[in-house]
Amino acid sequence: YEIASCLVGSEMCIRDSLHADPVYGENAQDTQFRGMKMAEVEIRPPRDEAEMRQLWHLNHAVFSEELHQHEVHDDGLLIDKFHAKNLYFAGWDNGEAVGMICAHWKEPFSAVERFGDVMRRAMVPGVTAELRLFAVRPEYRKTPLAPRLGATIFKKLDEMGFRLLIISGISEQKEFYEHIGFRAVGDPVQDGEALFYPMVADLPPILRRCALAVARCTK
Image (cartoon, rainbow, N blue to C red):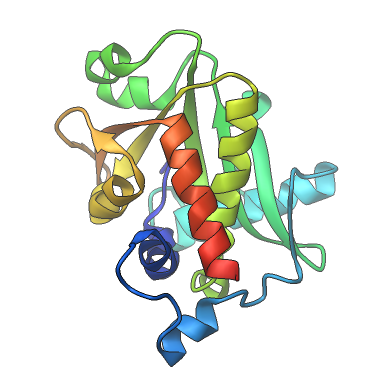
């Protein structure tokens, strides 16, 4: 469940902003994407345990209740098994968590556990980070929130010296991942009801593309 199909609502905004030919904002639907709710949304890490619990609730809402990749819990919380080593960024609208993304760079890697040597051979030791838990609330999916979250964590990882990203890319969004710079390095693997591809991306170009998407989507 590392990268969710919940990004489909943001896909049009990103696709339009990365194409050189179309002029972004030519129709009413494009207009609603521009800056929608973005003035109120702050991108930053969670500040305390209460805010972290909001991310666990969001994690549960998307990956357990919506995508059915995990069992539903009575307390509405889904705590990631790699929580202690994750770097989190979230979108906050008046104190409410409306989107999240995280990364880590220490063994074990979820993608290696899923894909084995196929993924390990694609990694570059010491400069590879795994991107996970990309989730956005439905009402914020037709906004630039997803590319803003991506650009924020990509910039941080770039500043830390990382050069390669790995993900478990859900099959429904494979074309989207490829559009923004990821590439499949092996065959898909079934995990529950979902099918995942081992995917990697060079960080500097995907950072540039995501930053461009944010600039074009929010102007």
